[in-house]
Length: 111
Image: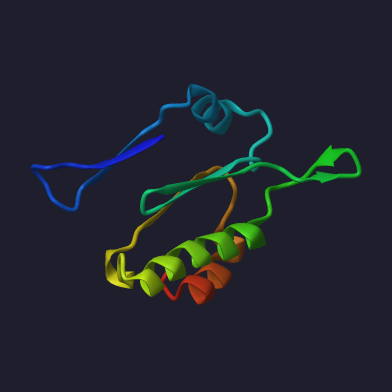
């Protein structure tokens, strides 16, 4: 994936998927809920299913929340960005409504 800002419209962010396999997996999977792709500012995180006794389970949403929180906090501590200028984009077919409260609490945002 590639991230860039439109020079004619500051603040407008565009994402170009460079890996066709991720796009196909996300949209054409016969077993939904198995891939989460996060973009935190300019860094990408990809989560795939965890193996449980030989069977695939949903990706670890707790791990995703912690990782995104760390990336946002790291930027704030280093002075690269403040919370108002940070962005988090999540591409998935996983139902995130179940973890929306956890996301809001960890990231200190409204979901």
